[in-house]
Image 1 (spheres, rainbow, N blue to C red):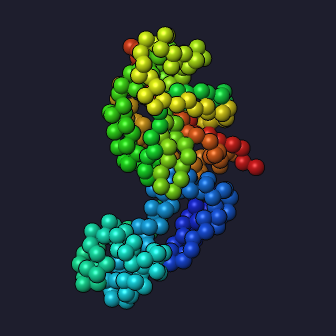
Image 2 (cartoon, rainbow, N blue to C red; image 1 turned 120 degrees about the vertical axis):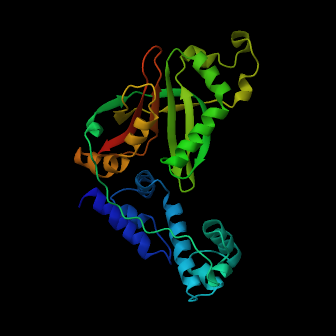
Length: 302
């Protein structure tokens, strides 16, 4: 069975259990991966977490039943997994923009339809790739917890906001490294979001003296909230955008191929996504056009 078909069957299981308990180990087994791996793949392919998808689908179905007068508010709350009518009412209002009682009176509702996965690929650029062994990499920088899935407009908006509001830290880190590359690391993907880390590769000497006032001549470094993370040695598949002055459109286009990469291309090549951080390396060489490389951790299929 192809990976795309396995993922479609996993969505079938979720849909069939929207009014009951959803055991994520079940769709994970369908997809031949761990629960964490399934949730990660789901988010990569659909631009939303499993939890978000389940919440939107349950509130859609609850709205349909309430509008048809087939169910009471308290019964809808229990049926669709809420502890109380109050928590259900708050979630319903956020999603539909009206209260459950208003829905029973026939006011307009929002609808979130079932995801239909039709993973396809067009064009040849996606095959421009390399398999790389990344040695252990130590980065110094700062992190933020982003909400939602690690792709799509929500990710881009949060990333842009982080970069705009932390320019001082970026300038400091860029000045401390001889490496022109900037690293963004996506890790710890959970149901409500993921960690996004921005950093640079500093020399051992600079890391050792980063907080030494007699060397830096300043006393504000401690208050910058910097941390050091180590990316372990791992095999990665690397895709690069084309060299150009404005890479964001090409970057978005490449990210748009993630469903094909993860569910079709990787298995065809004998790999699957591994449980390790993903890297997005911004190559800003002086007097050159720029490009972004996307590093996805992989392991051989057993």
